[in-house]
Amino acid sequence: MTNGNDQEAPGLCVVANVARETTHGEGGLEIRTGLRHFAAGAKVWIAPLRWGGPDVHVVGRHRGNGRRYTGIVVPRRFLENFRVATVHSPALLRALGGGPLWTAEDAESYVRFWGTPRLAAQVHVPGEPFVRRIRPVTDPPPMELEYEGATHYLAHFNANRARYSPLPPPAEPSPPAGT
Image (cartoon, helix red, strand yellow):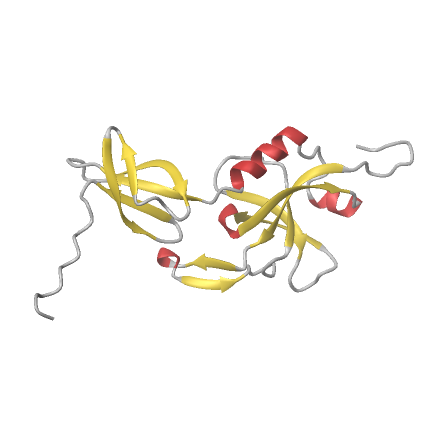
């Protein structure tokens, strides 16, 4: 990726911001501002994917030392505002791994996919002792979901997942007459 002047040629990269609030702990009940290494709203560059899954390798300016680039692996759910940007800095290119960056088609495709908030989803199937993982759902999750020809109802959700049950939600008790 060098030209005749021995300077790094620009490349495309997927860019995001660290979420203002991140959820941690059991059930996602502990809420923090930003991440340990990056402040809330910090701009981070996502290195081209090397593996599948919910985690990505990001590079950004560290919370404690804003001059140097730091690379860490973070869950993608801690990032927001995905977009495509051009990388011009040789230091940033080295921090991203020095290899080829994103193609325009791949970058746009991942920005569209990651830009849609998603939650892991689980369905309780009657007669089975466990819940079955299904395709992710939007965040916030829909109240009803069609799965294998049956309607399932949202039974529980938190920052990490939505769980559906074949049982409809309980009906609200009607107020006593005469009050």
